[in-house]
Image (tube, rainbow, N blue to C red):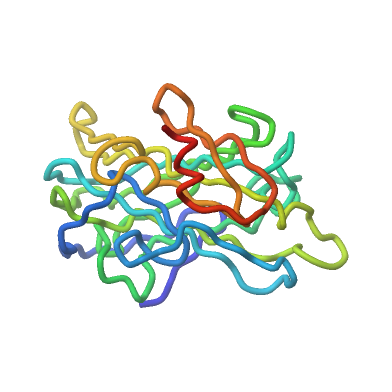
Length: 259
């Protein structure tokens, strides 16, 4: 299966639909990991030497429905922040004028090696970014908004307790070193899969999943970059708005900040 990577634009959709489900998962409602889905052993912290402009990082998101549901699409929110008082240039994507506007991509299929998480839409839903907002909470933070929509008349059933691939964010290494490089790759950062709305023809029954509910809890939806650490707002709604410069730390120390 080939990966379809989107750079802030929609893509064409196919016309057939089949249901494939994964084994029962013990993850949170929403989950975020580097390289692989939660159930396939994706890692929580990613360390990159920031020494090349080639290649990319994959940030894999998955979800576990609370109840059986029939989906026609989804809406997702990812929040992140970098060390320092303002968002590092290396993490400024999407919008014209930002340092790396074309370095964030949306991949709608799970990793080729995926076993524990499967596609909810069997490659039929069209996906696109709906927004990239810098400073939504603090000056060093940003928010990514995205959606997937099945062609009219199609729907896909998903089962409670099973892990499904939601989306993958592809972050390339362009402008990391050399002339025109964007600073901040070496800084610590934290990223959180804040929410995932499973949409249906009747919005009154849409299922909204959050990081802090179900299964393994908040840490399942949080990842770090270069050993950064994050903080969650007291309201319980995820807001990954703080980070520290890269340093050696355990995930237990990170999780202690969320209690």
